[in-house]
Picture (cartoon, rainbow, N blue to C red):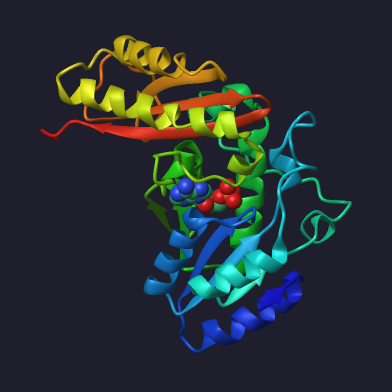
Length: 284
Ligand code: AMP
């Protein structure tokens, strides 16, 4: 069932909450693929009621980005989401979420929002934390599900929930990939056939770094070199960033300790793809 207004969603959820049901929440921007569906299935397995939001959030796009052209297909999304176990697809308009007098933002400060995607997209995380805080207030879920695909986003949201003492459990689910290793993304549809074929290099480069790390290479600059070198073998790939930080703090490090995040953003034409891998010391 699609619900488009906050009032109607609250009425529906209040009834279930009062009868002791647990609510799982999966925020998305729609144009669903198996990555999104894996979150819905997990939410359904762990909660009585599952709400998926389907909202392309304007405040997380910069003026030069793809807000207008972002792929949308609500009919197909509803079918897929319900098939995977969603009870409600919350599909608000921009006006419903941001009435014209809306002027409040939620922002996580510090390195965690400044590095990686925060460096390339300076206002992005402020938009993400604002809309997710709004959605949390509307849905008031017991648990919310996010993908490791957006590892920095997950780390930022965990920080927001902790800092604001929100009583919501965040669950981060594994990256779902195409058969050749490309991380599923709504934006993959933008890729030409040649770009699609070469896009597999993101995952290959990260796996190469992981193999080197597991063979004893802990020097961050050397591992970054391995990743960049592999990506640069793809002629259509243009690196936006390749970096490695401690995880989940996203603090700078020269030598990998217990756990680090290797993350990449690469442009193919106008399409910007991200991917990442966790490098974890087996001794810890
Ligand atoms: P989006 O619609 O791209 O904003 O993504 C909505 C949620 O789905 C976010 O928590 C993403 O991290 C997650 N997600 C997107 N792609 C994948 C994927 N390939 N595997 C797992 N989760 C994903």
